[in-house]
Structure formats: C-alpha cells, structure tokens
Image 1: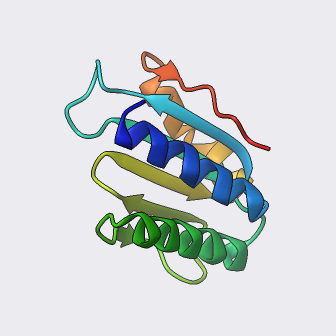
Image 2 (image 1 turned 30 degrees about the vertical axis):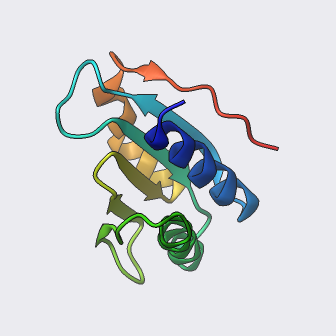
Length: 116
C-alpha cells in the first residue's frame, strides 16, 4: 500500500470518527496528473465542515505531511484542502448534490475504504 493510500485511509477514518458522512474516495492516478486521490465528505453545517477541516490538518500534521492549502472558511458550504497527492472536498449535502463534483471523475476508480 502506498503512502498516499495509507494517508487516504487514515484521513477517511478520522473524518468518519468526527461524523463525516457519505465518504467516497476516487483514485485518479490513471486519468489525472493533478493528484492521486480525491476524497469527498459531507458535513452537516458550516461549523461541522470547519471541524472536519481541522481533522484533515491535524491528521496530516501527525504523519509529517505538509499543511494543506485550504480554500473555504467559516460560513462556507464547501471547503477544499489540497494535500498534493490527495485533494479533500468537504461539503454540506445540498452543495455537494448541486455541484456533483465527483461525477467529473467518474472514470476514476472508487477506493474501497475500511471505516470502522
């Protein structure tokens, strides 16, 4: 398992532990040079999205990865964290349903996540 895949799994588990919903990971290594994986997660409100953002930043810090570039602040309904090999999208469900960003990457492979 690659470092990126291990990190993806750890991020997904930590986001799940913080009540992240509808978690989907897509492997885009064969179709994009931008990143290796996308991780899509729903949060229930803007404060929940900020808490999930903090989880991503803390998880990366714990494993020694650089801090991600973040787009999205308090009150936003979509936060993007660019972690280079992994790009994390945190949405409220209505915004995710409206933009359907993961459909852009439908040619990628869904990564089976082991969330307990």
